[in-house]
Amino acid sequence: MTWELHLGDCLAVAGRLPADSCALIYLDPPFFTKKRHSMVTRGRDRSFSFDDLWASTAEYGDFLLARIRQFHRALADRGSIFFHCDRTASHIARAVLDAVFGERFFRSEIIWHYRRWSNAQRGLLPQHQTVLWYSKTDSYVFNPIYEAYSPSTNVDQLLARRERDEHGKSIYARDEGGRIVPSRAKQGVPMGDVWDIPYLNPKANERVGYPTQKPILLLERIIQLASSPGDVILDPFCGSGTTLVAAKLQGRRAIGVDVSQDAIDLSRARLENPTRTESRLTLVGRDTYEEADGDALACLRGVDAIPVQRNRGIDAIVPCRDGAGNALVRVQRSHETIPEAVGALQRAAVRKEAARLIVVVTSNRPKDYRPPAGCELVMTAGAAIQAVLDTPADVQPAPQKSLGESNARQKQLRLLGGD
Image (cartoon, rainbow, N blue to C red; front, side, top):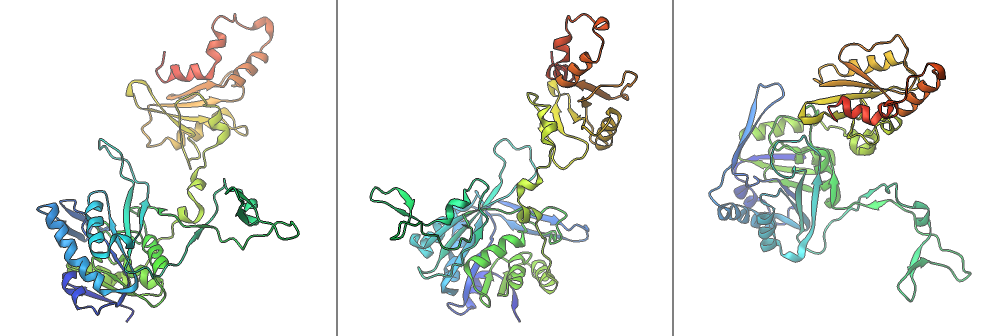
């Protein structure tokens, strides 16, 4: 069997493992949150929970120390340990790992960065967790992973080899004939220590309703980085079994341990039918989600507008004055009539509970057109000027406030409750 599960305290189970038997150990222990964690499955037919309750920092530290000593014994000489934690316990974990493995064997502090929904807490929104990486010796498995160059990189300049001159300045290397020496084949940028991997959303295929469940993609990257096919991967706090599933998908053997029978049963079910969520964000990049119309947003320059991505009817949200809700704004496209623009905004605004709907008109407004109730029209400066030019000079009204009134920015401010 390529995997095995053990019910019980990982201190005892790890103590029975042969020395130097595990190539990689990943642990995601309780985070010292001092609370009970629970979650209900999507079908609301089952719940999972565990306690993260401690009397003191010392008690939590002693709990980790005893177990990490056993993990160190079971880890192979070329092996690595990855300790997953967050801001509440990272300092404790670092001290314990330094004591057992030694400061010189600290390899990296990996930042798992993600974006989550906002909350009402007073302070900065937590958007990362930490994975501390230590090796057992200086001779450890490391498989470099490369990423694509950023758009700001002058890739063409990487085609030539560089060297330092007598002043320490980087210059192109040249051969005896003075020709520039080409560089070796480029593989991309070596992966850094900040990993942008999406947090599991509630509808992800791999989500099983276990609290603190991590994405398979995160564990696959760790396993690819510091182990080889056929190696044994140990997760002493396996929970829902994500590490074990990732190990199986990557052709490794896996050992999982947990004190909860529910966790063991869930891990077994996932191993028998592994499911991975394919992340479009990691495949195509976060920038590809930016689909707001640049020309439309240009019409709102100077307005405190929040661009709306991936919406065919709404271009921006503008907060109303004095906290009186939000206005949804659409800019008329060159290919659509004003009624079509109004209709697109109204359809997109269903169930959005907007305080106001505003269409920015970029072409002449039909003389007999009146927008439906609840929708307001404002004209861009260009449209207002064109309307003036299309009106015979002898029937134009006295200018008085017309210039100020035709300015789109001032009109929008008035519509949104400004002066």
